[in-house]
Length: 242
Image 1 (cartoon, rainbow, N blue to C red):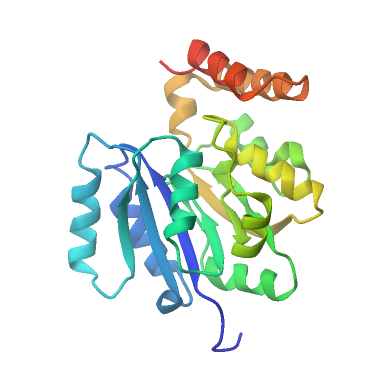
Image 2: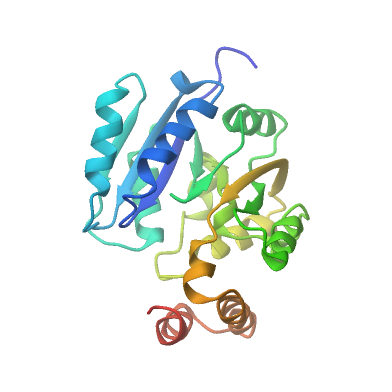
């Protein structure tokens, strides 16, 4: 890797993530190969908990790490992540959920793929759970199939490619990650880095593994049958937004 590597902008949408932010920032800094080449933008959608205080606590202890807190006028990951992209200075974006922890040297791994003209992709994923279904779901993420993709796996993409697609489709309150992923697969621009990211199973624990998985499958099926963003969001609100 040469010293002229482009800046990496890590963009994290935040909404009431006080329990995650300090751990996330600490993990990112400790696991990066080139922290001096990175910036982290936390895009808040109106948190009501101590999220900003946790950010400030970490920031006050680590002034050397280039991290920024940005308030969004609207909540919704698509809006927040697009705002992060607008505010970012990097030529490579890395979209990451607050409860997902990328592997050691994740930035060097992303640079390596971009140097090979792999302009977008993700990592393999593993849930922090020993449940057999979640272990299987994680194992399937090693397959470069669109059906195995999701936002929890994170997403790297060059600025140029992201802007050519038009960013995240803000008409999707849910399913926004999948819409970007679909656009990338249509262009033949998606790779799966063979290293593993760890993500929280907290949503499955809260909702129930089979209930949540069933409704995720239904949302996928409805999308395949032509349901638009309003219909998908209405289904989500009825069955999962409790």
